[in-house]
Image (cartoon, rainbow, N blue to C red; front, top):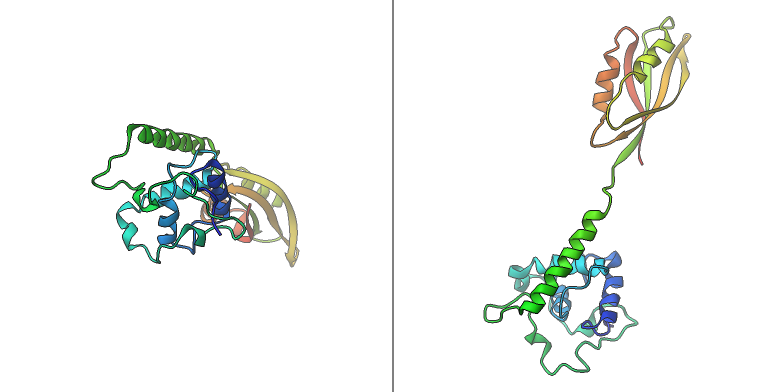
Length: 224
């Protein structure tokens, strides 16, 4: 097991792929496994390795709590993909891995070059993240709008319903559905942006046409 050489671009790519569907090196909470791998990395991963960089920034936020995180720190060869061997520091490192403290200890200051590199990579990551389009949560809603009786003008009722306009509301297809005794209800589809339009607002606006509408029910509600 391992990530190859975590001080190399190839090793960081292995780490990035490993974290593509994981939040942490082991389990579902930060642990000593994360600290062991974190401390083996020489600098923040580049912005294009966004899974690794996301994990790196998250673990760095535990600077003051790292000693209290659960688990026991093990050798790097105990973590990572089963088909990759750990070679971190095998070629040139004359110092013990424990001498590298990316959190920064009280008696060791970060070099200007390393600090500049870290800030540049963090800026690249934030810039890339900010350019991603925001995901707008939408829902498809099927409404049942019931009239008072069989003499209600259903064309006028539908006209009233469709006259309701709001940012984040789009009306779709509709049909009349028999409910008995010659009475038909209006079944109408709409798509809404969840942050802008809710079923309570729709019910309040639709039932305000009290000359035509007896009640409104949500027949179906599906996230898009």
